[in-house]
Length: 187
Image 1: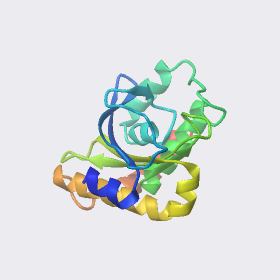
Image 2: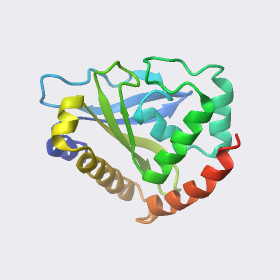
Image 3: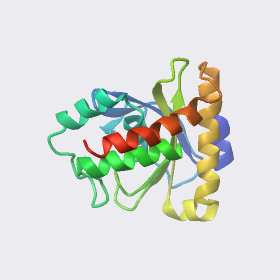
């Protein structure tokens, strides 16, 4: 599925998981484009910076998210676009969960890369991984953000299904996210 998404989008496709408060690349399929993300399998970055980590954070159980936010005395600013205010991050995570896809541009690397990420659900309804495409802002504009959103979400749904998730998993989580958003705003 990762190769198919790479071939359809023409962009790097990577699989990430959350470990010890960092998002870690566990698998990657390289783009054939000359300008591309140089992330390698095993690379790790703060979870709050960029679409990939925010997708994983958005789907943490509430207690685990609170622990993450509590352990991060300050959310490091990697670029001027990195969200460093925990309350703003919580609001952004609720939007991501509701939308079913995360987008970032210049949050981890200044003006160089955009990312689109969607959660992968397992049979228990937990998000263990997410799938992400990374590309330049120019190629994002040329290919169309909404089209890419749909391609990434569809790839995530397909992989989720292969992992035993129900076809309604994303939909029920979106409804749950709307309810949780009201509670989280007071965090």
